[in-house]
Length: 637
Ligand code: ADP
Ligand code: MG
Image 1 (cartoon, protein in one colour):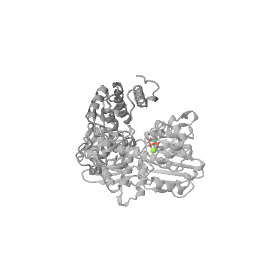
Image 2 (cartoon, rainbow, N blue to C red):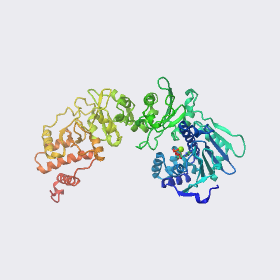
Image 3 (cartoon, helix red, strand yellow):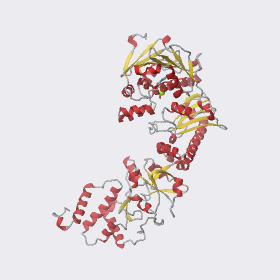
């Protein structure tokens, strides 16, 4: 290095980078090969960005228009170099790109690392973490870069131990255009300077990046092309193997798993484009990141344009891949593309295809489909309130835990096929955990009639169900809201107590409870909803159901919660006993009314409104029920 010492600036990494580097350097993760995939994908990105900028400024290409990536190995020096003739980096770009964490995915990765470094090390294997992975194999990394169209070059250098330096480089030492990443391999990574090893890894990981890759061995031998840069998506489907698709998926999606679904087709006719899309096999980190845009790359006649335009709707944002249009003009700004009617038509076509293929998969390979649903169902369900026009199709794709199959998944088609006599609605119970929902008293009357109830435990569920959806003409109804219209549906369980007369005293008792509870509830009534529990709370007929109300109240978005309705099981032993209880002092009867309400609250996972009053009432009632001799003192009033 020839730059004078005074112009070398050493500076610390951003704190998050330092943490990430520490993890890389001390990684116990055995598959370090992935660093190469990351560096090659950066080099290919740089070539594609140059091609794009050169549409407006062809001079940037100079006399070297063909993109290329060159790997140079020097086993003697234990050195591996990855060089591209792409866009290059200015000094500022270097500091920004290689000193901070720009990618939201990497940030999310760091957040997940809170679970401990062991866990983090395993996660490297599943997710791309970019440039810094070079420090898994190198004790020093030098990056020499010259941005296209400029006549200065810069050297970035670091040993990954907390600081990096940036200094001017002599033009003669730097690539004529683009970036050279020099890895000074650590002793235990010397194998990456071995030619056959390197060829094997490149073929396996990066064989389908759209830029040709060649290897040069400093110690002799012909330079050889290991990948020809032919765009995979332009080849006929029948000639592409599953392994090739998987490699391509990994390089385009930045994930290391296998795709759960691959969709490759060419649209002809009004719009001509090719699409190669993948549903990932596991959830990407940043799936719920509100900043996160779609990750579909847009190409125009094999030239990468941008990954910043929305090609699929938000509820399909887990899909990765690319679309290559033959119709969009090349020299159009990204802003104009977003508005283009051609893109709009592509968007619609691609969305149709993705939904159609998901449906086919659900039909033909239900187990595969269920894995996709388990990973991405909550995202797809966002479409139920975002995309009104697709609702029926999305409901068709949806799978649910239900009382008929709490461990498995049921489709609405199956639900409809199992409707009971006189059942006119699709019933659901929303909450935050399937296990808790299963034991809810609200389900008793439905169970007793063999009526299936959807158990909705995703937060997003409470929102789409309020938009009055229906499926095959059947409306959705919450079992915690309004009156349960169950009387018309015959019971299928052994018990036949529906037929059993209700004690006339119960009606009086219900009136008494209502009077006693006053403003605490909006109504008290008997109900067919319960068969085992004595009481439960439901929401009034209009407005949000109990779960949505809780969600809204928790987020401060509900000014005043509607008062619930207390429903009483008129045949429950406790209720009939209390109803018959005549000769007991009024305050004690009032205590039992309040206790019934608190019991219903507890069954809903809530706490009594006034815990102290609750404890006192409970104490009074228990004391009263003890045999006379055990009561040493009179309970306090
Ligand atoms: P990502 O590629 O997802 O942005 P990386 O950590 O791999 O994340 O790279 C960080 C940034 O460094 C890139 O976005 C790019 O701006 C810059 N960079 C890395 N390698 C190169 C290269 N070979 N040429 C130009 N820029 C590069
Ligand atoms: Mg990268």
